[in-house]
Image (cartoon, rainbow, N blue to C red; front, top):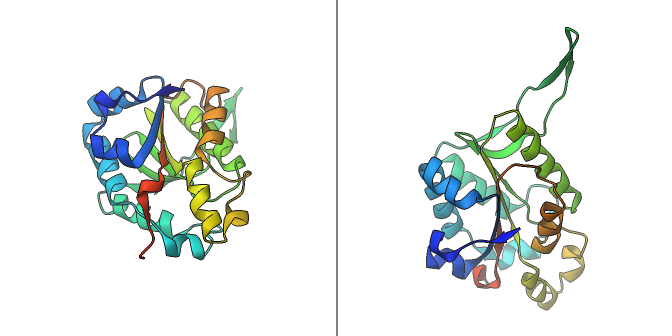
Length: 199
């Protein structure tokens, strides 16, 4: 996984996120999908990790994820499930994909805040399949940096955000292992700079 070149990223995004790319996903998104790329960056600028997000836990669809997704939905992004099937000798067998949290114009985005690391396998496999089927051009994953663990520990919530949950280092390991296949991927890791202790 390549570290994202700062030349392709605004300075404020670099300050708030650790960014990595696979198969030149950032230049691809910036040139082929400039509107969607700008909308993703705007949503990332608006995102904050609030103390209240951490204190309530976050099993399933967290408040942080809901707030982030809503910002994209207001710009025309949708939750999307593709109907796919395998046809062999005229016999069609359904082969459903998992729904994409945020989808627009061949760009797929998932936010993983506090799920089991197996959710990364699901997301990356979905990206790979949909890319191979020519349904998407790139995938984006927004997750949390390992450095946020210090904040969780300080709030007495470290056990709820343990090492087997969705953190950036686990995602990078899975992408480097080929989890996304040939699909270009951008990974954004939320830095401690996004933390807002007042809300």
